[in-house]
Image (cartoon, rainbow, N blue to C red):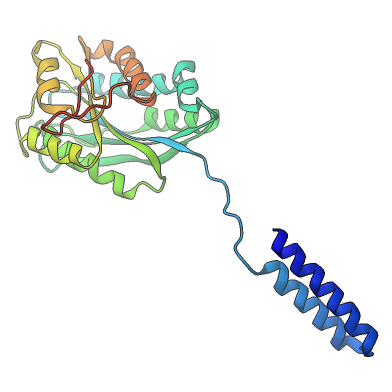
Length: 268
């Protein structure tokens, strides 16, 4: 800035001396002075526009496999929307210093059945968070009578980060489900590939009659820095479970240790 001011001063002094030595008349001199001024003030680098700081890129992966009926699907979407409307989640997103998160929603079922149903959205203030919650409430179910392909869901979810237009500090997949993998890619190799790219996978196990499901998610599904599993006994417990899960995901992880297998230290 100082260099530009000194150049401007030199230009003014030189121009003044030249005017004293010669006579410059007519529109030519006026045009020349205006042109030089435009070149001077428009040349050089311009400051970049400030963009919100994105602390988290979050893929919300919802299970819509055949074991999930329409009532249970609605409990998922309404519970997730309700969570984003809670004061705790809004405060967590905006703290500290009015930061933001980028979020997208996908639905998954059997081997070839994965779909991004809400595009990447920057949640930066009350209005954008409320609009995102409204979108979740309105989103229709993409698939119905298909199997449970968790490995494919993880691979698809990881690919969504490549289309995220926002640069964020962390990348997290939040996968919810009510059963183990029974189709498509093996879960653990898929999980390991995802985690090797610096992505954290967290799980919400909806138990029902499958009491083993939380342990299955801990062993085979989740991984990465600070990864964890939260359980919901039934779909009716999903709204409270997803609210707690989002709070933990939005806040920076406390444990950042790597295990030899690359899965990361899990926090349960």
